[in-house]
Figure (spheres, rainbow, N blue to C red):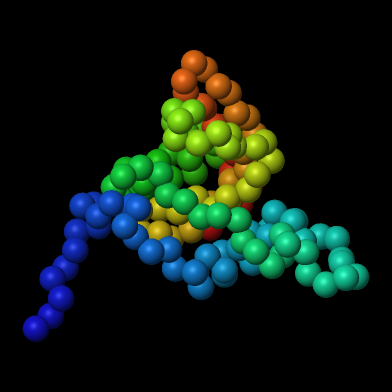
Length: 133
């Protein structure tokens, strides 16, 4: 008996597992192309070289994530909005890197937070694409 096929547009992004090997390979390429490992180290690998930044996908469904990634890649910029309560007191920091994944969990871009605005109860996080797959 074969497994039923799953329509990825009906799967919630939070239910997906991100492929760690694929993230590792993406991170190695992104680090090189974004020149994040340009300076040699004499005391072993740095944290930036050893630990990839967190990976995330936008939205609640794969289709929503895919549309968001397409827009970000087209503009080389993106923006998210959430309530301050959702951040639990830990607002995003300018300069922080993360890996933006599509609705299937495939890493598509390395992004860097370049602006954080708090307007009322909302937090608007703007970011730019540093490297794209």
